[in-house]
Amino acid sequence: MNTTPPSLPARESLTVEFKSDRKRLSDNDLVEAVVCLANAEGGELWLGVEDDGTPTGLHAEHLQLAGLGGLVAARTSPSVAVTVTPVFLGGVNVAHIAVPKGSAEVSTSGGVYLRRRIKHDGTPECAPMLPHDRASRTAHFGLADASALPVAGATLADLDPLERERLRQSVQQYGGDRVLLDLDDEALDGALGLTARQANGMRAPTLTGLLLVGREQALRDLVPTHEFAFQVLAREAVGFNEFRRFPLLKALDWLETNFRPYNPEHEIQVGLFRVPVPRVDFGAFREAVANALVHRDYHRLGAVHVRLDDGGLTISNPGGLVDGVTLANLLTTEPRPRNRALADAMKRVGVVERSGRGVDKIYRGMLRFGRPEPDYRRTDSQNVVLRLATVDADEAFLKLVVAEEGRLGTSLPIDSLIALAALRELKRLTSEDLAAHIQRDIAQAKRTLETLLEAGLVQAHGATKGRTYTLSPGVYMADGNKAAYTRQAGFSALQHEQLVLNYARQHGSIRRSEVVELCRLTAPQSRDLLKRLKVAGQLVQHGERRGAYYTLAEPAQG
Image (cartoon, rainbow, N blue to C red; front, side, top):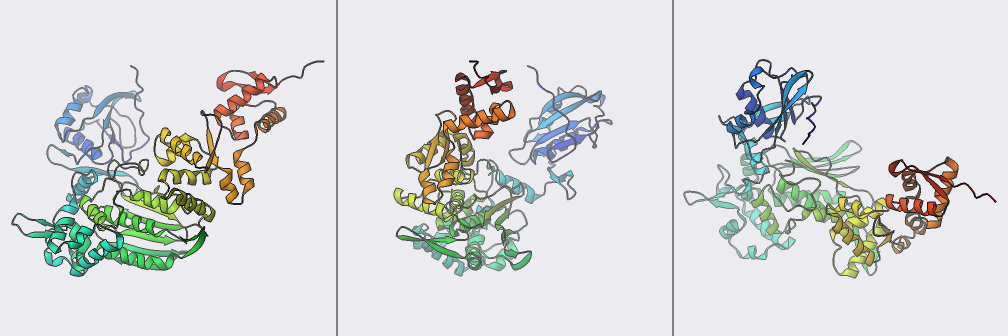
């Protein structure tokens, strides 16, 4: 089977390493370069290429590449399975070595741990993996849970009785596991993993214990990575900027108390009920802040930031998404907490969503008010960054959602809410379009749209193939915007035909892609329209497939 040889990148990057082989790169240096890439994102190692990207060729001893993969596997732990491909570039032979991302921290057989990183000037380097780097990477892959382990030097005296009482009050306030209220301190510690038994039989506070009910001074001394900030910026002026190291339940109370004056709300009437309309939904705010505090990487220095500015609310935390979670599956992947013991304790207290679907709650808190969906696009391997827009709510859309939820007697499914919000913004969708929004397959997207169709909230246009959907006329009428419905529902078939004929008359010809843009139709619908006009003798086809174009038919001679 013919395969295209790999192409040489223009420069080195986080995932690209060039190694000169003119003086024969030593086996140790080669293996360390592989380890370095494997402990980051994986990538490609080009042997026989200078740092500036110039191919200079392989040393004579490396021209036989057959044993190179075995060498790397034998001298890495756990073994790294690389793929070696010979490539002929610039008149010389070089080797392309594809390095997979390690599923755990990788070292050389001599115990050397390295990782690839980007320096302040934007260039890559291989740096030693220090103990906290290795622990962080282990947690990233879900292979260890630091929050369940005793904290070195911590004693029971570092736990605060006042914070224990706050914990019990939080169980009542947030509707947590009421069984916890009947337990004494020692049993509560065991149930929530606040302490762990040591080899000598004594109990010692875990990281979860210190973070939930620890004294502030103990947190400063024993968990120096724990810090959070609340900042308010208005027109480049700093209105509020405070950093704290409170235990987590006190932290949430403090953040909510300070955020409340900046979160005004008013009420609207929906039927017999008055519905509050805040600047930011408090349920979404609490879930987002709690997620940042619970899922941050406690091996890394850096604060959790809660920042309000003129454009919206930004919540960020150190530590990227854990392995297996991406921006493309954030809504659908199974919960994978970095700090499992801490997350479980917070769920039992009732502070975070007990189903593990806290992201759904954040989405719901934005979309039901007709605001843009939560924005995670600034998230990278080092930080999770969430942006919540604080634009005015779409009250007509909120009334629609509240009315439908009242009819159903329950909250709208998150997929349906996303579909309605996407139709509100984009005006027209196909099942394929919606599938990308809800991060599910096309079949599930179609079921969601058809359910909304049956409920009278959306209207379908076209046959099964190429079918599109808009909000129903009833939705636009309820908003007092009949003209908007007319625009989005589109023209009649006769009007489409006249548009196409007029375009062909004015421009001499028309293509299917131009019909798609002109009539706002799908490609299959445009093809059917052109075929109908051709059969009727009004258009003449020239060419086939993608090269086809259509002109007006000559009038019949009398």
